Image (tube, rainbow, N blue to C red):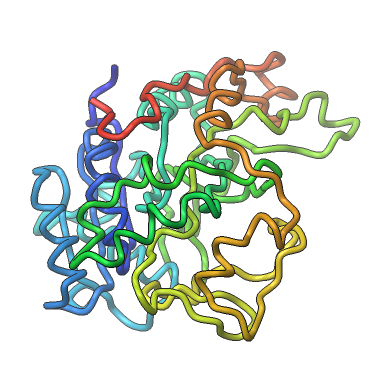
Length: 341
């Protein structure tokens, strides 16, 4: 297995107390260094808990948004702050990061593929590729899971006994969204800038494409099931008041940037009920959206048992005429306490 020296990580989080401990236990070893920027109010229960979890790992650096953020709260502004946490005193971004792979980590996105292997394989086969889009397996809680999940809300700080892999076991079989940049290489011209976006300006040269449209100039497209992926726990805070009906969506009140669930083609027929209880609407997602449920572990198995190929048409129409075996196999089982090494 590769060691963590191949990979850096940045994570922007706010109020993700129900996820952070188990996420770090599973993924922290993948990183030479992981920077965690926390938007929780300094001195709050959330900030204390997230900071405490980060302290368990010598390769994880914690910083609070109030201390590190310059300017307004935007996607790129927050990630710029997280990137600066990676630096040692006196280091510059260009000197420290140029040529390095950086994972866009999120505490609600969980992997079974080793991202270090993906970065190393791309460097070996296709050195001009510098960002990767990942697919999502969309985990939403099922009605049958409600009692077990909500029992943690009756305990003081119930998030400390909550384990996502054990309690959130159901996924939307039909969900499809494949535009998230999960991994990028910092280039000499890269900068975060301002405004929306989860990838620095200046890195868009070529990429591991999630799919492509068949054209005469596109001899091979990446099949929809052949791409890096992660499990996305879309809803992961079940505490009182954590979800509110607001402006046509179910808004996650602790999270920043207006995060929530809203009417969108990826959600089928789902739409918000302005008079309904927010938590009732979370647990009725499959019924309202007319979507079928599938165990997360079953959906993972269907991906892990597939031969993964890199089919980027830019490379196939130039020096690479055949698909390149590059995407890593699934390494870590989908069980609580399993972790990368």
